[in-house]
Amino acid sequence: MRLIRGLTNLKRIAGSADSPLADGCVATIGNFDGVHRGHRTIIDQVRSKAQALNLPSVVMIFEPQPQEFFKGAEAPPRLMPFRQKFEALLGEGVDVVLCIRFDETFRSYSGMGFIEDVLINGLGVRHLVVGDDFRFGCDRAGDFRLLQSVGQQRGFTVENTRTVVVGGERVSSTRVRNALNVNGLEEAERLLGHPYRIHGRVVYGRQLGRQIGAPTANILLHQMPALRGVYVVRARLDTGEWRDGVANIGLRPTVDGKRPSLEVHLFDFAGTLYGQHLEVVFRHGLRDEVKFDSVDELRQQIARDFEHARAWLAENPATPET
Image (cartoon, rainbow, N blue to C red):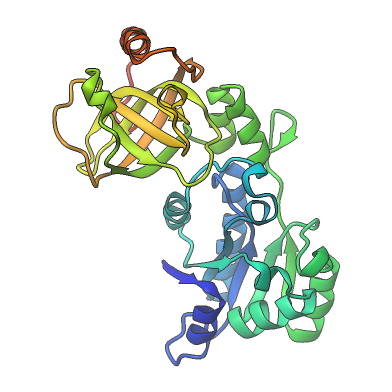
């Protein structure tokens, strides 16, 4: 799979002799936050049509996501960081991911400008899969009907996305966020098709966990997470080894944390994890994130968290593949 970052690179690649888009493509557009069951159905549509036309499949995503650009800190929390999204799309067999920087220049595109510059001249789109409520361009003036109309004139077709329903409602990133917001890990798993997980690289922290007898692997999160609190987790290391543990995800209020982070303590692990890329699977909620009056109170609570986690794990052992 190939990653194309930004319109400048798209135009350069589209004009090259060995462009993967030389004969056009079948594309879809969206945030694909979480790459949930609904997203995977859309990707199946795209891949099926791409195979029928012998063309590459393309997923267009945005960084930052549009609501993050418009709403800033008030935007909905992300389900996954960019790298994890890219890896998930790779796992679904997408040929090309086009990541567009969503900034003031891009948001000022007219509907027709977006179609001409990005879809036709950039991607050479031959078939497009989008929802019939899809809006684009400055002031959201472009819509599904405009795409169909222009497509008839310029030689590409437009198809509505299929809907996946679980529990009587459409699967969406919003539904997943809402489930996670109330600690509904089982509901989130039904919507995602797998347990909720976050990937990230381990960085150096303040070493507070080590000082209080609970060393943690610290993963910085660039956006506020959909989950907040303390959880029983299972983490996969770069070696492929899985380890059980406990994780705190949020702002670490007791130590005046100002940036969201994920701190993972792995049971019975004595090695170093700095620089490794962890996959952290959230299995069971233990408690909400709480601000304690002292570090000693925090230490005592962490000891209780470990005890409760081990008791839960004794009754709910993980399978090797999780």
